[in-house]
Length: 170
Image (tube, rainbow, N blue to C red; front, side, top):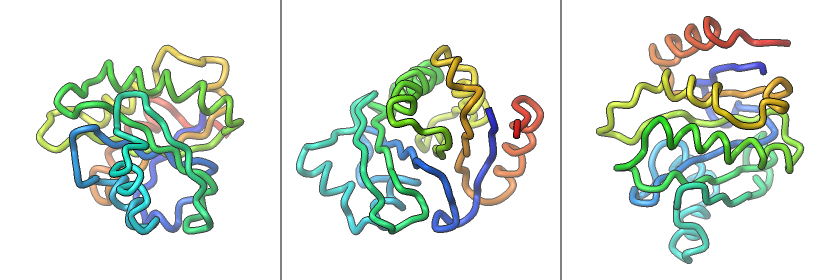
C-alpha cells in the first residue's frame, strides 16, 4: 500500500476516487463535504434535502465529478451520528470501503480523516485504524491511499507518522 498525505488545494489533487464523509446529524455540511458541495453548486445539500442520502453509517452515494475536479468520481459516505463516532466506527468504515473499491476497480483514492469538532479523537489514531482495518487484505497491497488533511503543522506531523508506520511502497 502506498500512503501519502495531501494538504494543498483540492483542485490540485489527482486521484481516481475522492471519498467524502459526512455525519447524519451535522448540517450544514462541514470540512471536505462542504467544500465538495460548494464545487458542485450545492448538489450534496440538495441530495440530502431530497432525502436521497441521510448520512447514516455505511450509506454511500457515487457521483461523477463532471470535470469540476481532476478526480473522475466522488463517493459520499455516511458516518452516522457524530456523537457516537469513535475508532471502531472508523474501522467499520474502512471495512465497508474496501469491497466498494474492489467492485469499482479503484486502486488509488483520497479520503479526509477528521473527527467531528468537539470530539477528542486523534487523527493519527484514525489513520492507523484505517490502515490496519480487518478487511480486504488482498486488496490493501495494491492500493494508493491519500489522506487529506488541513494545511499546516498537523499535515507535517501526519506525514511523518505515516512514513514512520506505513512507509510508501512504489
